[in-house]
Image (cartoon, rainbow, N blue to C red; front, side, top):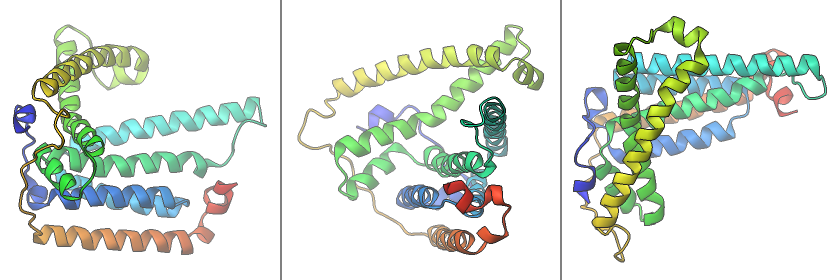
Length: 266
């Protein structure tokens, strides 16, 4: 089982080196629950800021800033599209800005915690942790494989980006801004072909190793260590949940009408 993922292990460095896989998984689950339950802009902003602090512990500021810029562009395009639809067909448009921003804030919050989980956790640790929680094989194995390929996806994009620059394409901010469709086509088609090839190789490797054929997957158990960084992260999780609750209950009345929870729910 370990050989299936042995080629590309994620090096764990920085403040998150001692953070356990169980803690990162639980932080992801708690963030998902809070993001779904919080309906106001104040709570979503608090959650997004706190998870961003957590994500910057990766010490990958360029990657995070690039992803934030992409999410910002997507939110602006969605807002402009909604405003255009509202101007042409008022019955279908929406003038509630908060209702358009909150889904993107939820996405940014989840992106922050999933990146930490995917880029700092070995697949063996995730498998061992989730099997220790007695989760079914059909649930934890696909999740582990999916998270394992997030760093690979970023590496593929970086390699394709450099290849396009070598071939003479001006892959810079101007190219991305004024030719977004062409840039997406140049990047996504090779990425999709690589993903299909990788999935085929992984499927053949899993079949040859007999994964899923036996009654139970044999994953080596690893001793769970609750370090000091785990304690501080849980203090941050409790503080974040408390701040989100306060934001949902106390800050809604201080927000403009377009951002208030009551107007968003309507």
